[in-house]
Length: 114
Length: 114
Figure 1: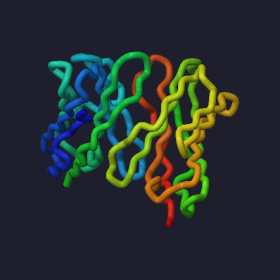
Figure 2: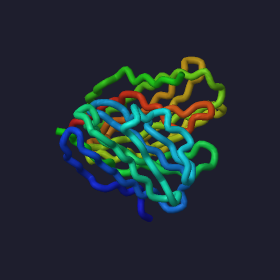
Figure 3: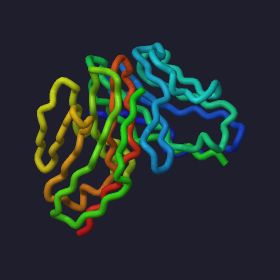
């Protein structure tokens, strides 16, 4: 079966630009997570969706970051006025939301802000 | 607050050697879940195991085994008879209390030499 997919796989942008990163979770998974991974570090939590609503957005670093999941499936992470410090791999994961199930990760989007 | 510490940044072994990856966690919650993920050079995180705080039974899966000890807040991972294909970064992660997201350690880079 299909796993979590993310597009684009790579995104290069200039400082100050707006970017959108897309995540398509495993079919039937109601929980969706975004993480950010910097070089040599473990993933850091950004936001968690249960269905269409953001259940926990405590990891978003500032108001330049925003995410939506309008139909409870595909999610888009939006970053406004990108800064060089936003450069990282953005990972999406999904899980069945029964108890504390394992999260299945996508391949990530590598964002480079020049 | 929850925290995961993987003190070993890099480990290098020769094929067929056994290797243990250490993980120490911190949480004030009595209910929590521990995970191990593998991140091969391709970059995609692969789920290996999940344990909950009420089940201290050690687990073995093929060449992999996990030792969960609440008394020392540790969840160590042993690979027996390592193979070159085991070379990857391994992450230990924690999910505790009402939080669904994972808190990751900084990872251990394992290199298995032929």
